[in-house]
Length: 261
Ligand SMILES: [Zn+2]
Image (cartoon, rainbow, N blue to C red; front, side, top):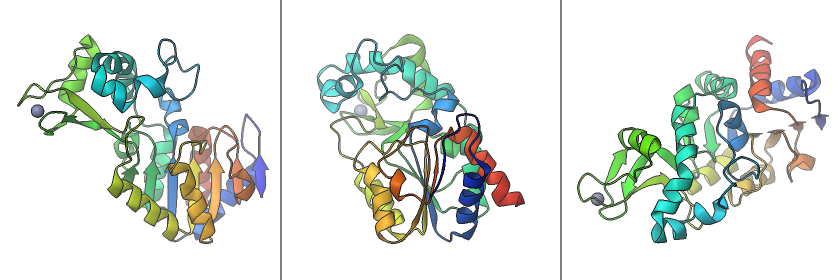
């Protein structure tokens, strides 16, 4: 295992080892978490100190129970985060992953993020484990709408988005605490994890189940594992390459080696 813990720049040996594995892989899958979106200005709402913990505990306010019983509390809490997501742009890490996919180096991105920054960067095959903020669904008639025309007024005024057909409350198509993961996404992610020959964990601390178990499924079938994250994960001891650093600086460095040797 090559490990680099430099806060300034990951060791070039670890970067090179990661590049070699990506070049050799035939069915690489990338698993991304909040750490890939924080450089784009989206706070990790699971982290205390992100600002989103000031009044409410996210696991309580961003739960299906709160949404059903006191939707205005959810929408109040979500308003600043929705604004940050709405205005965010993909960073160098998102762009490098899109280039890897376009060049055939990776097949699939499994993401825990709801911000669609991978798609904005040009990635095509993205499995969104926790849903997406790109669409909203009516809680009464289940009609689905593109989110943008509803999000802008909500972000500006805090007014709860309502269904154009029946005036029901529109729920962002994101998975709240206490809500089941979308089944098709989960099956697809498991299949990708079991079939891959390389998994790259990028910006996830692997703390949220069941997604955190996917790299284990890949390892159990003999895949290589690269972990790039600011903080250690439970699988660092099993990884071929560990880079304890920011993904927005590291992944473009790896891309340079993959594309230009
Ligand atoms: Zn409706």
